[in-house]
Image (cartoon, rainbow, N blue to C red):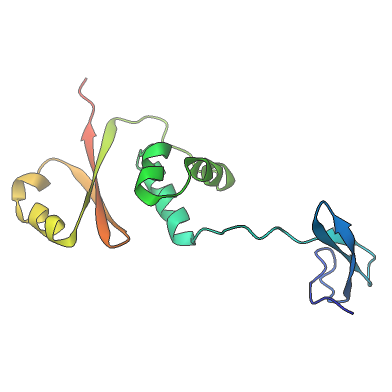
Length: 140
């Protein structure tokens, strides 16, 4: 019985089951005689959360804070930073503060002009809420 998996070496579809290694099905390519196993299927995390976690990391939010905000493991965030080779800026002259708000709270925040003076900020969607990240310069 032919398997429907592609050979990772030659891309042939002529593969057959060839035993079990470490509780994982092993396959052999009939065309190039290459043996391989398929990746384990994990729980899988939506790319939305990966992107949000990396954005928050770049903005200076700690791994543990990202874990609390998004509900994904801080270890996963560290692995994504390593996997995608995300680098923090060398010199940080500011620190980021953040606040999670509803749509109404965000509209009220923007309505008060004093909240917008002398600061940089970004607003990002966070599920059904919004996160406002605000930068303040370090005092010398």
